[in-house]
Length: 214
Image (cartoon, rainbow, N blue to C red; front, top):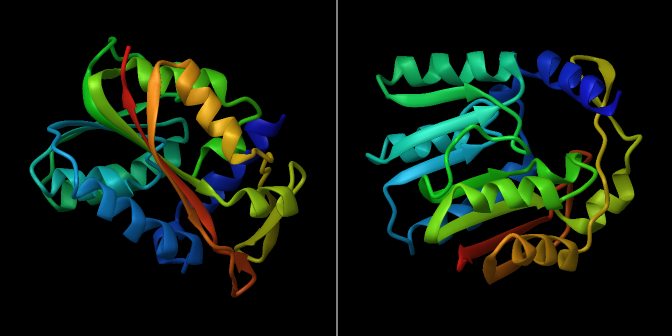
């Protein structure tokens, strides 16, 4: 029920997602981009791409990009944006807990603002690390744990004038670190973006960078 209701929320949101000011993205994106500038990579997976924010950013910089999301309407928006920019991106409708890619396929995996929607971190983190080459990097961003705790699994957001189901599970920083370490990665950075409230949104975040070691 949770996954189906969340999918319905993003179905509704897809048509205006890129036009809706999001304070969380505003504080998360500069941190993630600054980390990306410190790494060398070519083959990239944007896991839970949504409307293609990081997939398009990477493709415009000449990277070979694949992008997955399990929401078809969000992917339609992403594909249209890529086509308008004449970018070649391998878009696939997939769940990040069950990826179709072979082991060791990517130099870099980005997973932005999605894991707190999932009840258990272990399976998606295992998949995200699995598809990395040894020595490759995974960058995870998510809502700040304080925001996760405040919102909770029954949370709703006002979207197009109607309250929509937007479940957020509460994880501590150590939960993320444990999940990626069990998957065979070494934590390089765990960056806390302090909490603020802007236009009713809690805008703090968490950004983690890891390297696959096994």
